[in-house]
Amino acid sequence: MKRITEYEYKKVLVLGLAKSGVVAASLLHQLGAFVTVNDYKPFEENPDAQGLLEQGIKVICGSHPVELLDEGFELIVKNPGIPYTNPLVRGAVDLGIPIITEIELAYRISEADMIGITGTNGKTTTTTLIYEMLQNGGQHPLIAGNIGTVASEVAQKATADHKMVVELSSFQLMGIQTLRPKVSIITNLYEAHLDYHGTWKEYAEAKVNITKNQTEEDFLIVNADQHELMDLIHFSMARIIPFSTKCYIEEGASVKNGQLFYQGEAIINLDDIALPGAHNLENILSAVAAVKIMGIENEGIRSVLMTFRGVKHRTQFVQTINGRSFYNDSKATNILAAASAIKAFNEPIILLAGGLDRGNEFDELVPFLNNVKAMIVFGETAKKLEKAGRIAGIENIQLVENVEAAVPVAYDLSEEDDIILLSPACASWDQYRTFEVRGDIFIEAVHKLK
Image 1 (tube, rainbow, N blue to C red):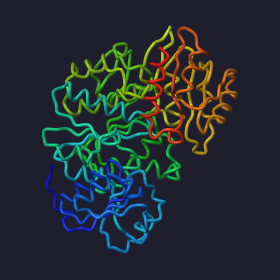
Image 2: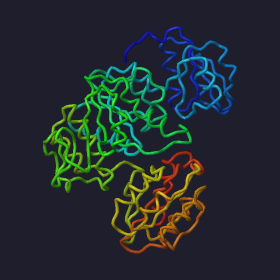
Image 3: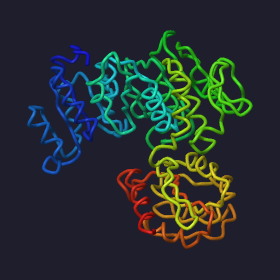
Image 4: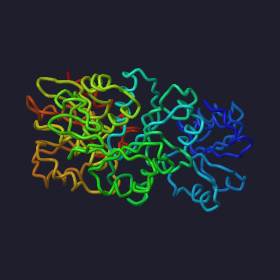
């Protein structure tokens, strides 16, 4: 960890706790800042805030009072989940107070080179693949970020011998100043999180922030099949490494004649790759490009790709019961992710879907429902998904209370060789705290069936 001095004696407000806020507040306190923490949860119900108070950190809980801005803060470290429409955040912007997220802290204290991964879909799979390949190739990776491990906590352990492999969300990337990954990846870019960002333009600009500080000494791996994305990154000073699932690219990562190539060199036969689904090929290509830049030999790459079968909650195989195969794709929190999971299978599908209503319809899902023989829908969007299913010509659609109730109904509707797929196309927050909780409940319900 770098012992930086730029936060010494600065008045810093850490806005919002959860895991990242707790780590950021403790780290800044350690770095000599005068830290105030503000969290919406009442103090008596807030063990994180209580623990920070015991460290000597000032804590204000129960609301986000705009009056806090009168205290002369020089910096705000904002929890990524708090939108910029929050009155306190708006007020800070109007006053010109810099606002960062803890990923910026992680970058500033880390001694390790960073590989940063963003995109609408595939971030976690790509991040995990890179970590596994680096480890298998004899390097010393650390994994962090939006994947579930707080980056500024991991960065405190990072040395120059490590590589930090960091999954980055658009929410995090809006709050960076100097963050400069050695290797950046944008897996793909589709319309998402507009309830937070407001517009496609703001969302896209947040994503391409990943490369804004890169120089010609750095690398940007980007999806060449998306022409609009290629236009968006035209300003990048990094060396562009394109990847494509549709055409062969001599100076990038692509496929040809049933093989995966990087810079004209055959790496692996596609038939030898264990990870299912055409959508995962984007993730694999970008991961291969990243680790080749880092000097990993082909054998280390191949051994991972021949055994890696996916990340939990991402088209995760759960179990086969009486010829029915169950897959957990709870991470599919948008239409495109669900469509990708559905396209991964040729067999008839019983689709379990539903969740938080963000105001959108599901017409875009309709063309992908051809091999869906029945739908089990739940949550706030149940009626909207039922409507989409009817448009697609699906006759058997059942409305149930939740994921747990959906599993036995799906089994009763299924036949041998069917796929029973949880791919909600929605966030989980109407019924479950996280998509992980939703997926775990699905897995448990499947095991109860057996």
